[in-house]
Structure formats: C-alpha cells, structure tokens
Length: 240
Length: 380
Image (cartoon, rainbow over all chains, first blue to last red; front, side, top):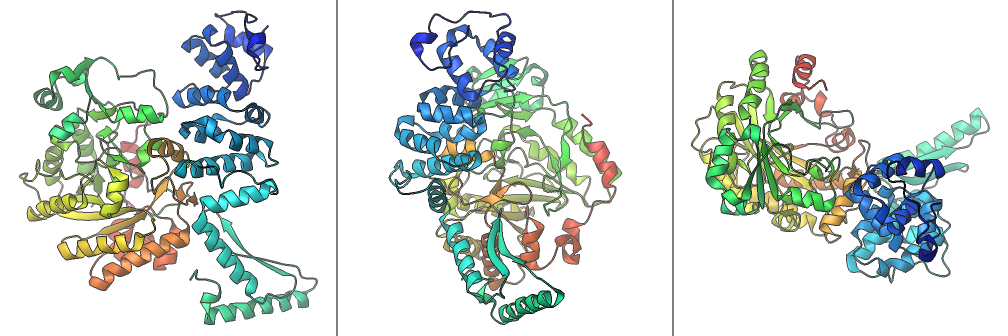
C-alpha cells in the first residue's frame, strides 16, 4: 500500500493511497517503526500527500518533534549516497547525530567520505564521532585529501588519524604524557597508563598482587617512583 | 543609536505593552513603517529550540511585550559542579542584538524574536518585596543573563530606573554587564555608589573575530572611564578566554592595556572564565559561524558539569599566566575565576573559594536562601 522505501521512483509513483484524515495512525499501524531514512524518503517521494500539519503529526507519531532542524535533516538525507542512507537506517541514527550535515553546502563534495563511513567497521558512536570531526575538518579548507580512509588503513586507525587531525594539541599533549609515563621504572605487574577522561587527563595505575608481601613490594616500587617525581616532577606532571 | 535602530528590520509591540513608557519611546524613535501592533508573540508556530536561520532572524526583529512571570532568579553558576559567586539575575528581556560566536543564548533561547519586557515597574515591585525583607543583606543583582544590560538601554532607558531603585537599598549592589559602549544615557543619574558597570572584555583580536557587533576594546575602556569619572564602580570580566596560537601575547597585551589605563582601586575585581558551552550548542555555532572561528575549532572536552571546556591543564595554564601578569605589575590586582569547576580552583589556588575568608563576601552562602528561593521562583 505504501511503497516508498525501496528508493525506486518509478515503483513508488502512483501506488500510494491517500488517507489524509488518519494517515499518521494508518502509517503507524502498517509500519510500527520507521527510521529517519524511511521517513525522509517517504516525505520526498510522497511529499504531495502531506500537508505541513500532517507531516508534523506523522513525525509526532514516530516520536519526533517537527522543527526546522529536523526538516533540514529529512531534506538532506535523500541526497546522500544510498550506502549512507542504509547506514542511517540500520544504525538507527537520530537527527541530532546527523547535525553536522546541515553545515555542508555541497553534499556531493563529501560523497566519498559518507560512503567510507557507511562501509566502515566502526560502532555507531565511533562513526557518528568520525562524521562530525571529518565534516568539521572538511569545512576548514573544503578539501577531503587528508580525510578519506586510506586503502591500507583499518577503520579504527582511520578514526584515530581523524581524531588527531581534529584535536592536534590534545593528541600531542596526551602522547607526551603517555611517553613520560612509560619511561618511568614501574614494578612488574603494575600497569601504568596516561588516560584521558573528558577535560582531564591523568595517571591510572592497576596492579596484580599474589600475596601481602607481593602487594607491599609493588607499593614500595610505586612509592619509589613517587619519591622520584617529588624530586623531579617534570618527569611526569608537567607538559613542558 | 542610529546603528542600533537600523539593526532591527521589524519591531512588534504587543497590545498589552502599547501604553508603556518603553512603547512611547519606541514610537518616538523608530520609523512607524517598521512597527506592528500585535496581539500575540510573532511566529507562534516556532516552538522549542531555534534553527540557525530562525536564530539569525531573532536578532533582527524586536518584540516589546508585557511579562507576567517572575523576573528574578539565581545565577546559573549556582549549582552543583560549579563554583560561582552568590548572585541574583533580573531578566528584563531575551536575546541580544550583538552576535558573539560563543554566546550561550544559542543553546538556551527558544523565542523567535528579541524580546524586551515593557513592565519594568512590575520587575521593580518584585525586587522591592525581596529588598524590603533582606535590606540589611549585601545581595548582588545583575541584569545581563539573557540580554546585554546596556546594548538596548538607549532605547529603553531601564538603567535609569534600576539605578534610582537601588539608591533605596545601599547594601544591595546592581551589576549592569555589557559589551557595548552605551553609558551616556544614565551618567547623570544620582547614585549611592552601589551600581557596578561590568564589561566583558577580550583582546581586540578576539573581539574582531568572535564578538560581532560589539564595541571595540578601546570603546569599552572609554565607556568604563566615563563611568569611573561619575563614581560608578567598574569591573572587568575577561571571559571567555579563547585559546588561539597567539593567546599569550594577546592576553598579556590586554592585561597591559588594563594596567596602563586603570588602577586596582579603579577596578576592584577582575574575573576570568574560560570558554565553555553546552554540547548541543556546537551544531548551531558551526552552522552560523563556520569553522574559521576559534570557538567552533576549539579542542573542547566534556567537563564534570556537562559543558564542553578546554583541557583542564590548558585552562590552568591560561589562568596562571594571566593572573601572574597582573600580579607582576601590581600585587593589588584582585583577579578571580568565575564559572569554573572546583578542580580548577584547587589546581590553581589550592583552595575552594567557599572556604576562603577573603572570598567570603563574594561566595558566602546566602542567608534566608530557602525563603528567597521560595518567593522568587515561579512554582510552575
């Protein structure tokens, strides 16, 4: 009855039945769930059937609040590559996660980027993060040269590379502290890492002890490092 | 004034505000073809957060209306996770006619037009109820939370009402916070020394890149000097500190400009705050200002209070450098941090301001806080 989701215009045309009065309920009963991609395609292919009020009601039926930002995303999505539309559908992305697309003037320019993200092995949150960082970097100089995934690069290496490009100061600082951390003479079976937690970064230590004596030995080893850092804090605690 | 009037393409006056003093002044000053009398808020269909284009439009259209809610509330810094001075805010409108890239109103406002409340007398009546009850206390009241205190003041002249009102409560302090140069309209008002005019300032390099439509640094300094000449108190907020490659040179130059023109006696407090914003705000900033802005390009991370901030070490480095620069010129400069997390205070000063005696006048808990909260917050 409603067949707008296969993205083939010729099949969708003429096959849509109008139930203007209770269209939102009818849609919901046929399709209890519709992804953002599906809604976007529905509005694009059967747009004439929906007054602004009906459109708002349809969105409300699916738990979405109509506003300019959502409308903008729904208008943008059908213009993205099919691979990306499928990705948004399968990963159930929300409109806010696609907000970076609203800042792109010419979507065609980032087509390859969107396809690479869609085909990557990243988790949903990683892919959303990469999408935002890569679009921000693209907006700086409108070039994708350094942003596309290299052939010999894993998805996770790609994400790390883009992250380093977007946050160069943070990356360098964290790397410097990580190097200083690893240069200290930690006891065996004591794992010392420099980690980032939001707007702070710091030392995290975990240790494995088999007995009271072993525990004491490791603490003494850690204390020895503490003594060393008290005398020369620049060995770890300052980023100079 | 001409520039201010030209910045608005349309002015709406609600029927319930038509007879107000502000409306009379609007009719006198604004070309009548720009004015429309309306029975409801323009763009009633716009609900919730604004898109970038709706937000841009909201800066160009002005709405004068009668406000029926509570004008008073506590400073947003007064909540768990933040260290802030005790402070009340008196909201006399919504939205600002200037256009700073980092402005928090972008994630806060849901009104599609710049709004000015016409019933200043009701605001003062609400203030009076509390002032009479706590006239012996030293409360501080600011008007610059959801509007710039002075950028529209040439139109409304509300500063004159407020300064006169505070003359009756000399222990209370009024803070008018601005990035404008608009002070001439109240300089002749008699006052008892409890009005502080505060300027948010930044190096000229940042003003020209990020604080669009605001007064230049030298214009702000000149306006501050005019206020000092009339014995008004003046404070500077160097806020937000914005990292950029030449940040140290530019902020040192700003400190030097302050210390050359003013003395620690002229400016009793200088506060510092680093860039921060709600995570969702980054989207509208990106759309409105692109990625050439230092703010949209900033390397910010989620902080314990849910806002995006620079790395804690970087913030401390910036605070330390600027405070040291002030102190190297004169140890009497009193520089404090505002809107910062306890971690920053502890890392920088080794103290929590709430436990520091010298900070007590600014940070002590409010007496009768519960009562005040009860009476000043709309139960709905």
